[in-house]
Length: 463
Image (cartoon, rainbow, N blue to C red; front, side, top):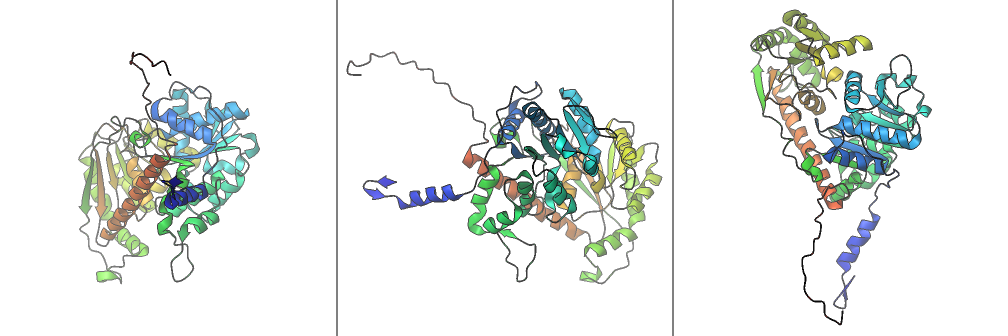
């Protein structure tokens, strides 16, 4: 670019760098008219995902990921002539089927025989029973399941759907612990493989080879610009240029209850081993007291729905004995799939007042806005597990203030500090992604001002 006889080298260099920044190419199509349930920012997100063809919708809990997933699947069904597949955690399948019927989508859960519906909903652990070639598109619900770089599930999903034309990933927590985990989403979608992503934008700056990577200082903005070319992220509709006044979360109250029980100290800092195994031993020794405190908390509001999160089967059994099976339902990982689904359904529709379960079993995807009271019988180092478990109740659509009770003992305070740090990292990631979207403007909704000229002067003859 030349300015006043001089070449603006800075502008030229910026243009050169911009041209060298990789960007995902759209391989999708123009959508047909969407169902009436799709409007506003949800329709906007679905439109972007359909046009891109291989995309991700990182929408916070309660923003309508399910409707976006169903509409994407419907559009792909019309385009390809083949049914669409939506993969979900076991606990979510029936819920999605209910919502699909409510919204007007032809969808059914795969159980014993393959449904002949436009959209087939299947939980991840039944994927080996599915003929992938039957489907023209795939949607990964709660796609943070891809976060493990070396996991068998991740590798199986990437290889199984390598040739599927259209793909969508949807989750509120795409990379809860580390930004590099976005690489598994990019590889699944066919945008870029993980190794290329790491080489381009990340650095392993440890003294020995490891899996600990961080973004290069100069690569932060280009990295998020690239992510914004294939993913949409929003904590609120405002992040996409829409009015977010109807999406304000109610107040969240955190109540901490300390266990006053004698604990035999193990070797470690200040007499306590604060490693994961040390914390587990502390929890084991204080389990009886934790159950007792939980019962007291729950009994203080007998008419309320309660969600009780525990860590072990031993805690779960003791809690059920204390709380009573007439009011509470227990959901454990060892239960068969049908029994789990039935138990989760009983709580979701109000047949049971409370539920006792683990975040690893029912911590993702479920909508429990009917409950506003939660107990954690201990803490977890996993930020994603904590975030998702709290968000089952504290989500957009919740009308009441939510009360979360945490029962902690000596040595567990450090877990809270770890979670606070991870929460800050997650917030930084969301802010960086939203900023990248605004730079590109490719996903931002803007109201166009229509020009209505009012000037009625005389036009000069020379014009």
